[in-house]
Length: 330
Image 1 (cartoon, rainbow, N blue to C red):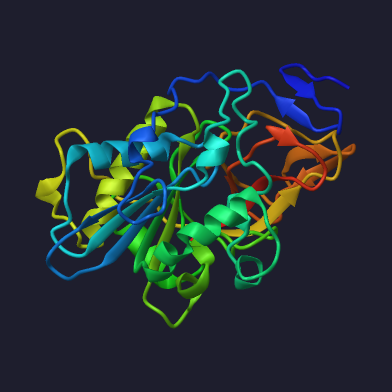
Image 2: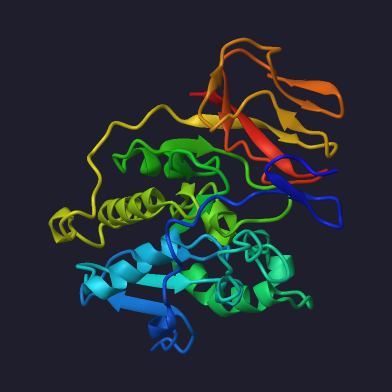
């Protein structure tokens, strides 16, 4: 089977034609050497005590708008007024394999870097490219009081701030002053994300962790969103002051929309999954029982009124892949 605008691999997976690469990959060799002793980890430290902020990019090797934002931050010379800012380019092995002709192919080398953040895996005997790197940067994750994990999306859409279920993360995301939709979710069924690792997932703790989905991977707008959220995060974490931000880095202030709480994920059962229209995410489907897709000849319908679609995509369609998340407005 071959579909219009898509290719099929030998395994049967359907991969849609890639979106145009508007944003070329950054050069990161300058940041490889580090006083920390760990490659592609850079620190900026104040003489005044304060929060320990960790900003990560390239958790997925083809999602490099966040790497551009970190590169710009490091080149700017901006220093924390309080505490410490640590910038980590994570899965550089996958990133170095990026090919604009096959831009989806460099998401990871052996396994998804953002599914290995459990003590059982990190302390266990298993080895993979991603686990080796996760173990290298684990000390920086363990010490951080604040984490901003910079990602992007398969399909075009507005920026999302994915918080987990903890009220402190939701409130922090809402305080940033962006139009980015706050998405409240319970984690990923396939493994633990960095955002939920260790003390970040402690409901009685005080550490803050957000994951930004900045927009489509290779759109210029994704870099603008990543840079905007990065600066706002540093201000709200109280390591820099708003007046420190270089001109032009902030997008206009905007009241945030109400959060969306994810209640379901739609998982493809067959290679015949298709949406009924070209959804971009953020659509509110008014009535329960409305078909949004068909799968193996059967309709996929909304489970309740005013159902919000979150990150719909069939870019790498195969049975077992999440094609869309469904949520309710708070």
